[in-house]
Amino acid sequence: MVENNSTNTTIKKTSSSSLSFNPSLTLALSGDRDHDHGLTTKKPVGDHVGLYRQDSVSVGSSLISVASVCVKREREAKSGESERVNNISSTTSDQVEDDDDDNSVHERKKLRLTKAQSVLLEEAFKHHSTLNPKQKQELARELKLRPRQVEVWFQNRRARTKLKQTEVDCQYLKKCCEALKEENTRLHKELQELKALKISTQPLYMQLPAATLTRCPSCDRSGDTTSATNAGSLLTMAQQKPHFFNPFNKPSTAC
DNA sequence: ACAGTCAAATGGCGTC
DNA sequence: GACGCCATTTGACTGT
Image (cartoon, rainbow, N blue to C red; front, top):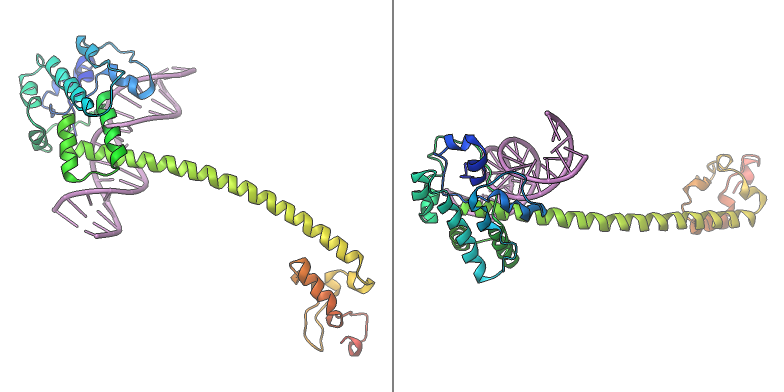
């Protein structure tokens, strides 16, 4: 994929040797970079840059013409550079698609959309996050871009939206996690308090460490208090007093 | 000069 | 086969 980047044409000598690039693609002048980060380029640009300083681009139908005019003027400004560029850039988007693969030069020059193009694409995205072929063609025609470029822009835009949503979800889950941790800590504390309370009211033999409470040989019930996972089961086990096997007692008296 | 960021573009893969 | 999604690459640009 190769684009006719006017910025490069102005600044980089490499573009002069790449006039066989697909000239139908529109590229933002360096002056348009301010739509990305609110900053202007520090590089020198051509005389036609001023044409693109349209910070107050309106949305809606007028946008289309704004974008088209920008693109058209950009191309007109480049008319002196290459006759071929001029010829093809004045063609329709259908023709734009034709030379997708035929250029032997496949340097990957990156397109920078103009602000108007970006705004129009954003507007379109607000209405539908995906485009049907007809919409794509139409949008591409309005923007003087190849349909594939419009398609790619929408794909990347969807990816950005998804990423943003993932970040929002992540933040929400983090908050949930924090809340659950707090709740868990609180419940643990409560459990300890209940255990302490329970033990202090139990008979002496029931306060023996779990290790000393072995399996009752006669009824095969466990006396291991570690299996009691909550205060309720603790209570149950306490009520089943005969099944706690005290090794200090004679087996016959265990149960 | 270099690292970091953003976004256009590519290629692979799955789905319809 | 066209299309969308995803991971990745790559070029343009900024900040230090």
